[in-house]
Amino acid sequence: PLITWLTDNLHTHLTLADIAARASMSTRSLSRHFRHQTGTTPLQWLSRQRVRRAQQLLEETERSVEQVGEQVGFTSPTAFRECFRQISPRDYRRAFPPA
Image 1 (cartoon, rainbow, N blue to C red):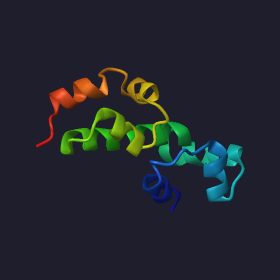
Image 2 (cartoon, rainbow, N blue to C red):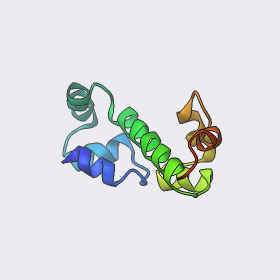
Image 3 (tube, helix red, strand yellow):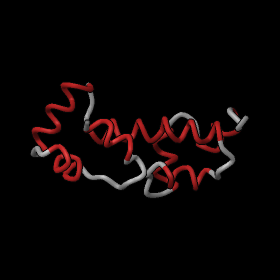
Image 4 (cartoon, rainbow, N blue to C red):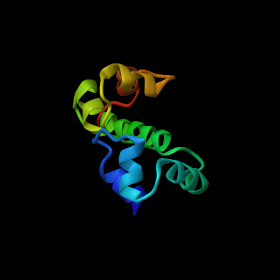
């Protein structure tokens, strides 16, 4: 249920404390259980999911890079670009234009 809730709330600014409260756990317990289940921390998982959703939107829509970043929950265009690491969102869009 927590993964579903996180997926449904990618656009929301979430802290580890927010996620832990939703799971009715301490942040430490959440981190331990989440890592055991997924192999990563809650915030790293959230970031990866945001990037995946952003990739879909860049491929499937004409929305601007800034709009896509905002829609998937990145707090700034810089934060959005940093999560792409190897390729900028704009270059990704050029490589995978909307159909």
